[in-house]
Length: 280
Image 1 (cartoon, rainbow, N blue to C red):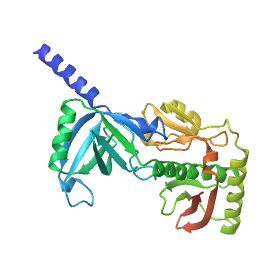
Image 2: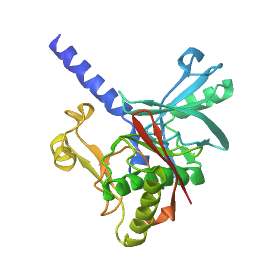
Image 3: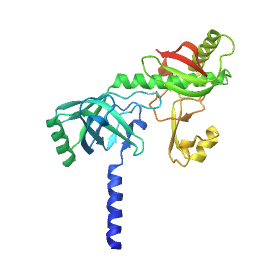
Image 4: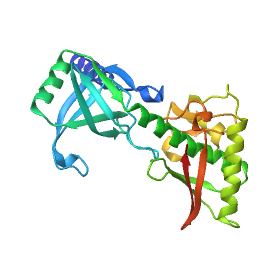
């Protein structure tokens, strides 16, 4: 009986290792094409899909290059290529508990059979991310971080609350108040963003590190509850003017890729101040 328990433990540990997904988009924000194999494929009933009225095929890949919506950043869009078939990805699902990104595909009988066969034969597929869109999302996300540098540099006592880095109206939001005229703060932020971009040296590139809780505490002070006991916290620092922060999104390699960060408007939203922006 003890032997059987040991065998079961080894078996389930092996299964867990086989199901572990590697998030390649965290390693390289510019990676838009990459091969992988299928770990799992199944049909998902429509009641498990938000705002959908049809069944979907859900795909789990060994290596994943698609960034799922989160941290104020939208889903990547793209396709997978299997043999000569180009298959559109309908949506992404971020399973945070399992640290997996699942791809949802339109349910077609022949496609399901094709994917099942590819899984059984350990056949390689190619992931294709919309390259221009990925670059745009990375720029919008980095610009939000960049504005935060400017906010700190001019001495505003605002506390970062959230970011919305979608193309239809990007903004960063802070807990705080507007002292004086919003237009004056807008002008000051714009001038500071321009100055920081101009002064950043060519060799001052993005740095990504993985920290434990103690190391993170040394960087940012009090660690948020959701990082308690977490190892390998991804920490992003865009340039020397950036204090850095924990972040799971895609970013430009160098802030000069932003070209121009335009502060469009500053407005009060209840207890929050919203800084609306665009990138060139």
